[in-house]
Amino acid sequence: MAKLRHCFTILLLLFTAESAHSDFFTSIGHMTDLLFVERDLVSSLKDYIRAEENKLQRIKRWAERLDVLSTAGSQDPEGFLGHPVNAFKLIKRLNTEWAELESLVLTDVSDAFVSNLTIQRQHFPKDDDQTGAAKALMRLQDTYELDTETISSGRLPGSSSVATSSSVLTVEDCYDLGKVAYSDVDYYHTELWMAQALKQLEQGEESSAVDAIAILDYLSYSVYQQGELERALEFTKKLLELDPSHQRANGNLKYFEYQLSKQMKLEVDDDDEEKRRMQKENRGRRDDYLPERKQYEKLCRGEGVRMTPRRQSRLFCRYYDNGRHPRFVIGPLKQEDEWDSPQIVRYHDIVSDRDMEKVKELAKPRLRRATVHDPQTGTLTTAHYRVSKSAWLGAYEHPVVDKINRKIEDITGLDVSTAEDLQVANYGVGGQYEPHFDFGRKDEPDAFEELGTGNRIATWLLYMSDVQAGGATVFTDIGAAVQPKKGSAVFWFNLYPSGEGDYRTRHAACPVLLGNKWVSNKWIHERGQEFRRRCGLHWTD
Image (cartoon, rainbow, N blue to C red; front, side, top):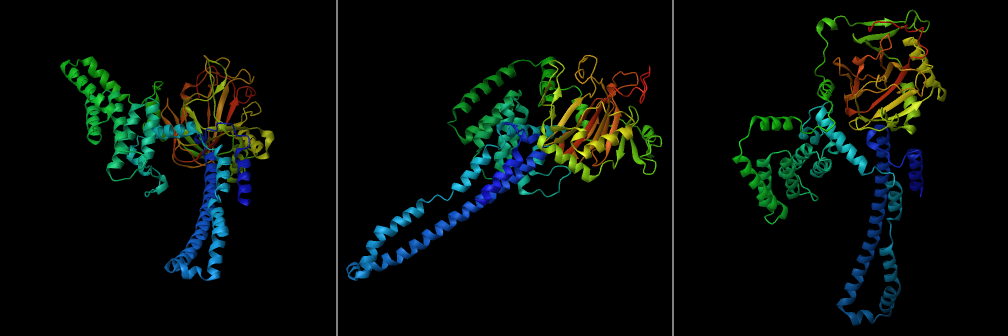
């Protein structure tokens, strides 16, 4: 009972204010809670196993005692029963003790465990969460150009050289990833993960749930859908070697052979060849593929940064007191130039670990799937290109939040009274935010009308955790990449002094490859800055 009460306590702490569908995979913060829930369930399962073992031990002792008695009696039944005590005990055993044994055997010691599991299962991740996590793995695979072997073995860049068994994908795991891709009509990733599943089977890994026949069935169809008839035929023949009576494979064999002979008779012109080349190049890309994604993904991998040595030599680190601001005269800030045009600066050791932990603590119960502004409807909505959870904290809610807001104002010299609340975000499995602008463009005249504070003039981004691999903030137009560093904040202006949007500030949050990324950002608006950042006619930094 104590354990059951403990489980209820965990549930109350974990799931208070949770929505019916939690998008667990979008937040490491919420997924850590799931680890503790699972650990509690394992403890409950062990209790159940001990109870079953104790029950079996009692039955075993009873069986051993009866075995001795029945063996002794069967050697000379009449002589044995001629003793009145033996006769009495036999009648007593059959009338009373066997009934007690029956009751013991029928005792269900699983009630506590099943009850605990039933209570917690209603809060488990759903099919959508598993699908989201699978797609996140494939997103990491594409962005960081990882092969399936690297992911399956758990040896990701930035991780220890020796992967633990919990970080390794089994045949079933690879097969399930392939099925998720197949359901999404993503035949490119279907092929990759089914091929990995087959490879692991052929290398001797055992699987009770998946066989080569099922894998080859998916493989042949996925490569056929990508226009590779010869390979589709090859996989089909391999399948039929294992199961000659496979109905679909026999039908596909005739169809593929017919299509291949038909294809060989036709002359392949240059247009067809170009079409095939483009089809192969675009494999795995979604229909809404961003033209800049190639640049975005390169920057995420640390490639394509456009900072020349000459420009690099003009970037400096300095102690900064914001024009001898009273708060920084004695203790100036450490300021570093991250980029020259547009100017992006980083401030080091801005917020203490204690304050950052308090912000996370305040935000965690409120974390919800992050939304974006839909220019068509004017409403906030979730989007596949922003995968994280966020919460909003007002200055009035805790002194730490108020202290951070005042520090932002003191450092930037801008009025934060018209800024949006502090947004705290936690990026989960493959968490990312694809290229976007923070400011409202001319084709979005009503973007922030309801706030009545004008456009977003500047962005303050505080990194509240280090990230083992991935998770950089990249600026796709200028080719800049800023790496997360706990306790540091980067700052840039989104608008020129003229009030026009600076399109060079288009940026993105790269997927987190390894680790846990916490950030908080402050979007500062135009109203209140009239005498703090004077307007200008020229489009200059």
